[in-house]
Structures are given as C-alpha cells and as structure tokens.
Image (cartoon, rainbow, N blue to C red; front, side, top):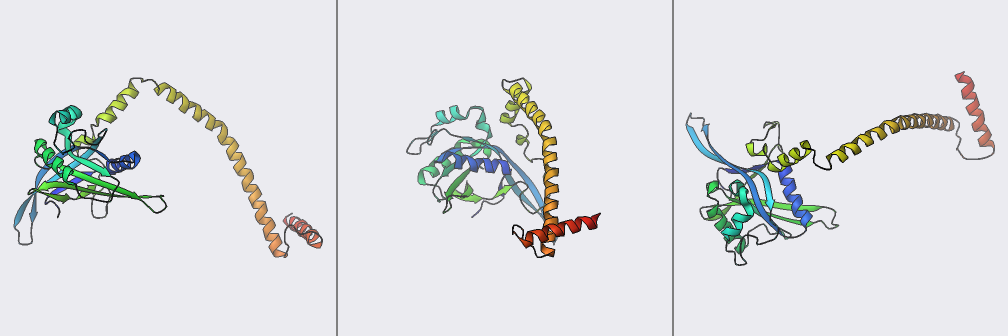
Length: 280
C-alpha cells in the first residue's frame, strides 16, 4: 500500500548516480539521502462544485551521502549511535530526508535490523515532519552479464507500518499531458555545495586548470591541421567511389565479370573506350 499524499521527486541524474554508485561498488552499501520536504494544500473542485482540500507532500531528493562501511552509525544489534551519527553528518544533518540500503540480492523488503534502524532514525530526524524515507535497491546481472537489472523502492513509516512511496523522476513521462520542467522545483538543487566548490576552484586558478586549458588549445590546433587533410582524402574517396559505380554499370550492361581474363577482358576494355568516346 502506498503512502497517501506523499511523493518522492528527483532528477534523472540523481537517480542514475545513486544506482551507478551501487553497481560500481560491487558490494552492499548504505548512506543518507539529502534534500528537502515540502508540503502544500491543494484544492480540488468536483462536478458538484464541492471544494475539497488535500494535503500533498513532496520529498525532493537532491543528493546522497554514501557511508564508508556498513554499520557506521549503529551497532550490530541495530541500536543507533547518536554521537557517531552527528559526527558523520555534520552540517548535512538538517538536509537528511532519508537513508538508503543497497544489496546484491533481489529482496526489496527491509530486514529486521534495518527496520529497527529506520524507526530510530525517523524519531531523530524531526525536521522532516515524519516524512523520513528509506530506499531499498538491489541488482542482478543478466545471463551473459552484459546488462544489469536494478530494482528500487522507497518507503516511510505511516501508522507504525512501512508503506511504499511513489517516485517521480523529473521530465521523464508523457510531455503531451504534463509540462516539461526547465528548472528544478527544489531550490536546494541550485546551490549544490559540490558544484559550487568545483566552480570556485576553477575560477581561482586551481593547479591543473592551466594544464587542461593548454592541452585543450593544443588539441584544437592539431585538429586545424588535420581537417584539411581529412577533407582532401574524403574528396578522393568520393571520386574513386564514382568510378567504381560507373565500372559496375558497364559490367552489368555487357555481362562482364570483373577479374576474368581473355575475351571478357578485351571486351571490357572496348566497352570502356566506347563509353568515353560517347561522352566526348
């Protein structure tokens, strides 16, 4: 059963990065989901002109923070360690809207210890207003190991039970019935600390930037030299292809098989000479 009026929203880049992190690690992994919880009241008018108000909550997932190992913030028995949790999250504590668990098996349900951890985290993360989610992800390779199938599910506690929460990936859907969003709905996506850090290093002349610019300039100059040569070779190739097409047409017209010797070869040469005389 799905949680009523609650929706998890994220971009395709965030979801694919989270799934790729799972496949890249190759082992069980867990971490925290960062973002914002936004609630609003929407009005729906029925055919009988009755106005119904409905509370809707959107859990915007903007990033994730992987843990270095399983059980970083809880014991083997599933008891939450608040001190380790606070030290690990630091300034990101108020941005945490959930946590995730990745494993290689196909099971999409929480184990007993994971359920205990989620209940304790939900009680600690009071800033989410009770909308603290958990994501369960699992993957398995195909028969030839050429592709992977990844399953994912988001859940939250509702009436002391874990209920599924639907996931909406922004701009993936039928755009004939829904608008294409040019900007993210969540302001947190504009001010990513990771992106701002990279941009500030580039602007301040971080070591390595000058070398990258020099390499880029050198590659452009090399392309300027090679492009005329490539263009000339392309023209020669087109000329040869035209000649091949003309020769094939002559062979088909006179039932000549290219490569045979004797009379067929002399007849082939005679046909070519006659065609050239006609062209003159």
